[in-house]
Image (cartoon, rainbow, N blue to C red):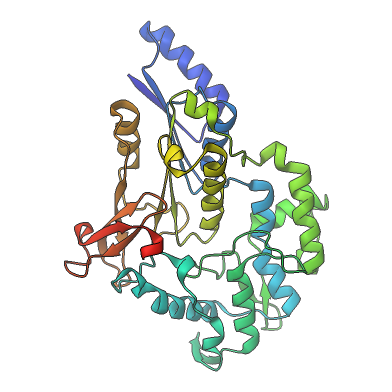
Amino acid sequence: MCFWCWNDRLQTAVVAKQVIGDYYGRPASCAYFNGCSTGGRQGYAEAQHHPDDYDGILADAPVVDWDEFEVATLWPQVVMNNEKTYPSGCGFEAFNTAAIKVCDPLDGVEDGLVENPVRCDFDPRRLIGTKVVCEGKELTVTAADAAVVRKIWDGPRTASGKKLWSGVPIDADLKFPYLAGTLPDADGGLKGVPFPVPSVWVATWLKEQPSFDISTITYSQFTDLFRQSRTEYDEVIGTDNPDLSAFRGSGGKLLTWHGRQDQLIPTQGTVAYRRQVERKTGGAQRVDDFCRLFLAPGTAHCAPTGQTDDLGALRAWVEQGKAPSTLTATLTNSSGEQVTRDLCAYPKVSRHKGHGDPAAADSFRCVHPLRY
């Protein structure tokens, strides 16, 4: 007899165990947690702070470093405001489409599913001068548009060029209502429309002025806010402690998938945390014993990746000792068709064998990214 908690916290886990034990006269044989986004963050918090609560944790697209992430995801708006350039939604789509066209074939097949976007070196400046039809009007992509997109993809940096956080994936949706949202103002010109969560975080929790005008933030002020948030809130809500030794010692298993096309939580933040855990734990193999990460191409934030049986995979790992090397997912290709693909356990990536149906999972194999 097992029980599940969704996006839950310590109190419910404790109470649930007590109720189950009292009702059945024996304790539950296993306990599971399932959450995505903030729920994913809560899953990692459980593994870090209450390692005995759950035998298995499914924590997807996690906001691992909330204190840094929330400021970092305001970066697209800061860039547009400082550069005084606000690309249209159609303009952002043109950059995404061009990047996917260049990056997509890297996995051996062209289906609109970018398997390894971090390897893509598409330069948005290649689109300068391109004509884009937007709401019946023909627009020309400018050097300023390309510069803005380049900075957004690159991610937040200090004035001296030090990297603060990863950028939005090159194939992720930037336009309204997401991180680089723009809409016409009263005069018909475009203005930035920040995503509410980072906007409220900065205005309310950092500036302590709910009516604070986010559009006034300079690059240097952004760096100050990033550091302030980390200093004041890391211990409160950071959940970025790479020491999972207690969870490992308890026999717990942690499984995570994260969409490579996540438009709200940059995928590389999760990858960076995974690498920190590897350094702390003593290498990838030791981490794989209790914690596995899967990255899903063409998958947006907390989107159903594939009606993939991630819960089943976690149960098999906990109850039968069968660690998953792949997760079979149903994805949607550029033609709107559903295809099956095995998501490879990090750091491996999927590559087409050179023969076989591109819509079938067995036409692909998992390879190390250095041999990609």
